Image 1: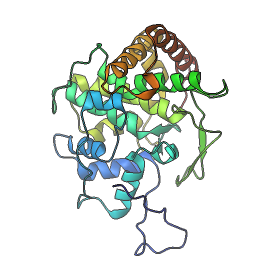
Image 2: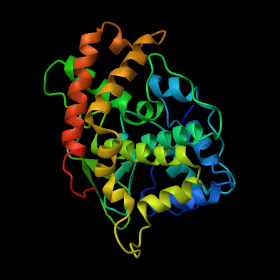
Image 3: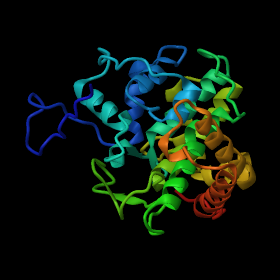
Length: 304
């Protein structure tokens, strides 16, 4: 059972409650540096145990998660609280699962790490991935296709058409020491940080499938580090362009339809899909891919 740890109230000494690091990618990199073995798989296994992949489609691809792990000795209690809050998926508090990156974007960690695990496994590290029926791309399934398809289905089946399927974004209390992220409205299942983390998970998973790297090294190379001293923009600032080139709206539509087909074939199938026909799946996939591409990919500019 997962017990929520309270956030540290101001003025409480660290002896009473662990000091939680800022919600910045640099804090995650410090933990990964401590965890990484030369093969780079430990952090991924840890992420799964802490609840990165909690949806039926993700489990169909990655398998059942290992049991909840104990805190490794190399990680401080404050770092462990930070990690468990980031990775324990609670639909009621999605703002706890996000980090501020050096490019100014806010990234959800769960789809990012799920994409990294698929990339490592398709590159030959760890257990091979299953063949999905109907065929679906495992990398797109765990990062964006399942959550996007289910979000649009929920929006269509909502009591009114006001249910948003994408967005919103939000803001940090303090960009120097980010601790609290506040949404600008009620979050859909795909708020902006989830879309961004999913695009990053696809790009980094595809990179890992070509050749493994330690996860900390991969993330450092992609996001840069907090001081911004390196010249030029980090690769993460080109995510929209690169995702558009790699995936494209047509392929995204195919993969949303494919993963909804996988979900329909599960036994038992998720309640949302019990009476959904093939034509409805096709229509939802088309709309989801079009609106996602317009909102997140179509700008063509460099943007967080």
